Length: 167
Figure (cartoon, rainbow, N blue to C red):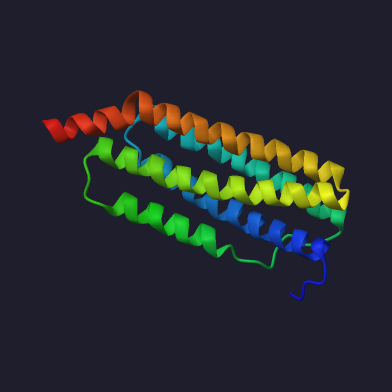
């Protein structure tokens, strides 16, 4: 796609996020299944439902713009998901695997936070106030998920993984 202006870049970046979120919709159930910690597993399933909502918000933005959301593959998300898949295939104790799953999930969250922050800024500059509001809502949810993962890691999973090394 030839990009002539910020509007074109905005649409292209939104397509990248749309593809990233759809990749994540497929990956999260696998992460939930791989997690041994019930709270972590449920957290992945809860985030799956949020992620489906992110896809719907992006569709809403595309509808308003009169553009199609497809046509872009998010290579960054492909790589992050591949790393998560490798983590699930490692020969690791359950607590260590859970800590690794959190690490992989937080990489994804930080990637999404960067992407949504960028497109939200584009939306504001372009006068797409409704799009900016929807993107901010998703950005807030991604940040909250990252905080939940940190809390879970610090309060139990990383502690349990470190105790396994001592035993």
